[in-house]
Structures are given as structure tokens and as C-alpha cells.
Image 1 (cartoon, rainbow, N blue to C red):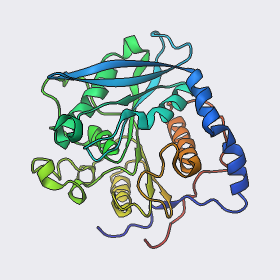
Image 2 (image 1 turned 90 degrees about the vertical axis):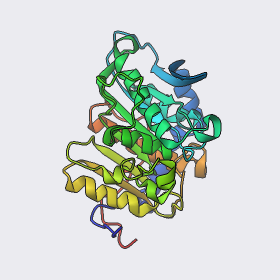
Image 3 (image 1 turned 45 degrees about the horizontal axis):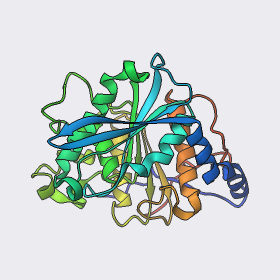
Image 4 (image 1 turned 180 degrees about the horizontal axis):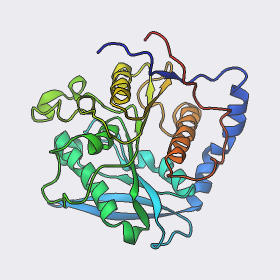
Length: 313
């Protein structure tokens, strides 16, 4: 893939901005997550059964939420290379977004290590989870037209393919219910599976299963968080994908974290600084598209990233 520089945005914390970032983000230390947990309601439900396996959605509701509400919602898919991982990875994100007024969910899906399945089964489960939420919008108090999807690494792949790929649905799903999300929040997502698991793991359908080959006009607005030193999911794939999205007329923001590798965004990594920064940018992105209202309860300086060319990669 050729370098694409005009769409790369650097996340730069200058000497003037850094003190404000650290001071403003102090509220997002672990005590704030604990406060968010106290201000939200947790519920676990089975959204799908495959044989004897039960797959659960871990739901987080704002305090005082009612079924009569029509709140925007988001569902996250954990990473783990389609082999492992757990939904708990995105529990901090869910608690925060529920605290901010959304209904947030983190989904279980089939993986090789626990279920002996290949990645297409995970893709089918991702679609099923989105359909389950949308089809039960009335009882859950969510707006079916304001349902976003997000995830990290393999989970980011599931969120993106729900919007872009067809032919990976569970035959038991009601295909009249759309699995396409209205926005995507992707953390070092797997965008070209040829660079990872390859054609064999995807039953010879690697290109069909790769978002980078499925870009077309009319896709949901997307934000991608990517580290330049990612040795699992190449940074250049995210840059190339961003360029393709913009050429097709879609909104796609690539937020570059220099010197950081795979999974940098997770809660507990590097003193939670990247977690706070990506969470703030996620909040602002969702607010710009009508999923959130008001300002975040913390301020990481005048802007979390500069939309300037990042230079040669």
C-alpha cells in the first residue's frame, strides 16, 4: 500500500497544552470510573444461542433510564485476534458513555480459543448483536436510528464489517433488521485481513471480509485511533483506508498516536493517558453526530489532536 499523508492527523501534546491536559484529565483517574459505575445500571442478557453456547450482551444504562426513552446506543466488540479476549475490555468505555447518557453494550462473540470457530462466525455474531439491539429498541429504550458500533483490533474489524461487508450473516437472523451501524469508533482495527489471519482463516474470502476492499459511498462516519508503532495491525493500513473513505465521500478521521503500539488505548495502559485522550475524542465525535449532548466532564486542553499532516511514515 502506498503512503497517504494528506489524511494523517497527529496527536501532539505541546509543552503549552500538556499541563492543561493533565489537570483537566485528573477527573478520569480510577475514582471517576468508579463514580461512573455508581451512576449507571448494569444488565447482562443472552442475545444469541449457538448449540449449547450462550452469547451475552453486557448492557450499561444511565441512572433513571426508562424503556420509554429513545437514547442513542453503542455496542463494542473486544479484541483478541478472533482467538480470545473478553467483553470486559470495553466496560470502562461503556460505563463512561452510559454516564454521559447513552445506552452502551459490550458483546461476547464466538472465538477460536473458546468455541473452536473461525473469524466468519465472529462476524456473524457481531451482526446478530447489532440486530438484537435494534429489534428490541422499544423495550430497551434506545433509538434504532442512533446505534453506533466500535471495537478494538479484531473487534474493530467486526464493527467495520457490519457496516461494509455482506454475506457473513447468521442464517437464523432476521435479515429484514439492518445490522449497519450509524457511526463507527475503531481502535487499531483490523482493516485488511490478508495482513493477519489471511485467506485460510476466512474460508478463502479474505478480501470480501476486509473493510479496506469494501469502501464505497454512503458509509457511516468513522473515527480511527491508531499508533504508529503498531506491529500487529499496520499503521499504513489505517492511513490507506482513511484515504479511500474520504475519496468515496465518507467522513473518516484518523487520530495518530506517535510511538505507541497495539492496544495503547486500553484502560490501565500507560497511566491511562491514551485511554483518557481517546475517550475524550470519542465523546466529541459522538456529540458531533448527535449521539451525546453537552460537554465531557473533563477537558484535555483546547483539542485532543491537531488535524495536520503527520509527515513521512
